[in-house]
Image 1 (cartoon, rainbow, N blue to C red):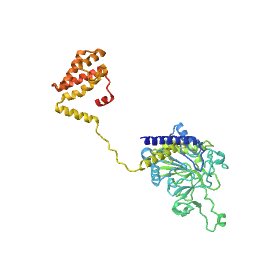
Image 2 (image 1 turned 120 degrees about the horizontal axis):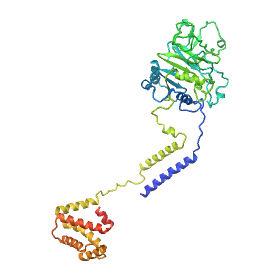
Image 3 (image 1 turned 90 degrees about the horizontal axis):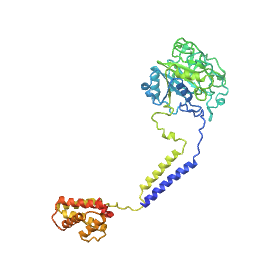
Image 4 (image 1 turned 90 degrees about the vertical axis):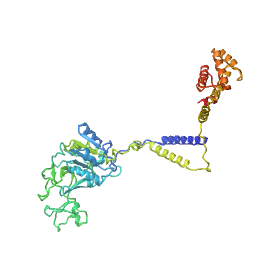
Length: 489
């Protein structure tokens, strides 16, 4: 027992020492600013790269903005086709092919998908008719570029003007983009000889370039440099669209599936910053710069107006994808709650101590000893056995003698006489001290003496005498020895 107590005290001491060391060595680390190389585009994030400002603005202006924390497959059950599903920026968990297919089926039935990223996931940009939309990046953010540093993010960048008034550019005079914004291009997924455009790359649609004669040679071809960027899509009216679409030489290509350009890229070359196009009965909108809707950039120029027009799109409900941002409804956030505190290390050290205890308790450090043999018989079993024997033998005098002998000794001590004193002497002394009836006490003692000596005794009378002896002890307040008390239990 002493060895176990020593081990227990040692473990408790070790735990306290570990807690003291962790508390003494813990230094609170200030939360660093969000950087563009490791952004967090969640609506829960109030840092520079987050989108919490846009989400709170939508909530305060009466829009039904919801953080979607369930798998995309639940869209058909929980969200109708009059909603907008928004996917912003670099995700912590990529879309699986199954999730992407489920999302596009939802869009095809009438839903609206908004993808905001410099390099969008190609699974989320489906082919519409003969057209596809893809993005290219000219400048990637370096390590440590802070999103809340407006000078660093927008250095040398002019405001982007709408191509023409559309539903998505309502109340927008200029948009402040970052210098890391992607450039969107429309691609044909098949080659059309009469369209005046040559598609390099077959059905993947690498890019749209103006057709030219083989003998023509550009500066890049002569010096072995890369070919020039593709031409900018020229605005033209398109049936069923809400803005400027890409113009082609063939009237067959200018249909409702052509992507609509709402914002020109604003840089040298051709491209767009915001396009949308039809997919089934729904629409897909793509914005090539998350900085526009981020907490750091939404207050610049008319970025807020553009962000609200883009994510609402005339729909009554806006669903922000938080499931792929790492905030799924079934995830355990216990460790995330204690992140940055010494509690996580305390858990690890506690687990190490527990493993050490299990290992030491499971090893034998001495010779094997036989298991101790424990006598499982209780004292009550002996008493019950003796009572049953006496009852079967009708030895009521013997049962009364066991009770009377203890009571006689207690009365003798109470009266201050020897245990061998006659009954009348014991009764006299007890009555003198307690003020009780001497004759009744003496009669009780003599009857018990006669029963123990062999006088005839019935079971009921024996039980009555034992009851009167117990009541006498209780009335006088006689205290038996601890051994006798244990035997009576």
